Amino acid sequence: EVQLVESGGGLVQPGRSLRLSCTVSGFTVGDYAMGWFRQAPGKGLEWVGFIRSKAYGGATEYAASVKGRFTISRDDSKSIAYLQMNSLTTEDTAVYYCARRHISSWVAFDPWGQGTLVTVSS
Amino acid sequence: QSALTQPRSVSGSPGQSVTISCTGTSSDVGGYNYVSWYQQHPGKAPKLMIYDVSKGPSGVADRFSGSKSGNTASLTISGLQAEDEADYYCCSYAGSYTWVFGGGTKLTVL
Image (tube, rainbow over all chains, first blue to last red; front, side):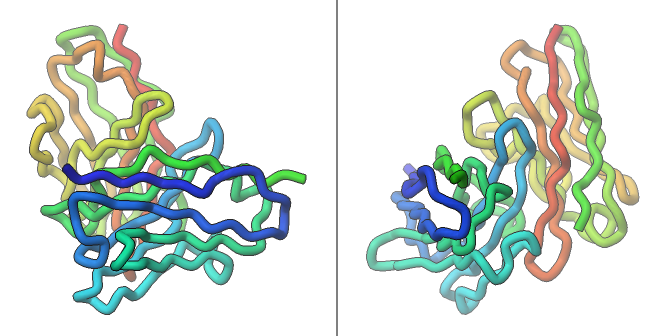
């Protein structure tokens, strides 16, 4: 069974950093493109970033709102994808989700993890 | 990128059909046949319901269907059931490995 589990969320002060992990099972993390998404409290979904599969060089792309501050990476040996978040602001407060690209479409995502809450506050 | 435009809410009675629209631009919805729809129940992770405009993932009821005309995509749910009550989000590929979501639509089953 394919599963994704996010961890690493919590309370962090503005300006600080946090690294989220997405531990996967049921597939090899490097074999699939992955996306990161977030949802601010009471708000809609927002795409955060994308990492291509190893076959496509593992290049990354980011939403304008996080570009230059967030970095996606992955450790194939540990079956983990990461979201490194630097220079956090209160606007980054959200539940963060990772998701694998759908098996039949490289532009849709499924399944998703359960999410991890990041709260940026002093 | 601006968010895609969805109605804030729609409603229908059990057994009826409802349609949720999703309007973008020629740079996203209109430019690619890569619109997907996600269902999200409160406190839960999103679930893919439709991908590539009109394709249904395995395990999703065929009561869910998708279409697109120009810059507007639509999700239609026929034979409404109580468990369909949820938030629905459209999402479009916007080129250069970027994506944009709609603001979400709350479906109420009366």
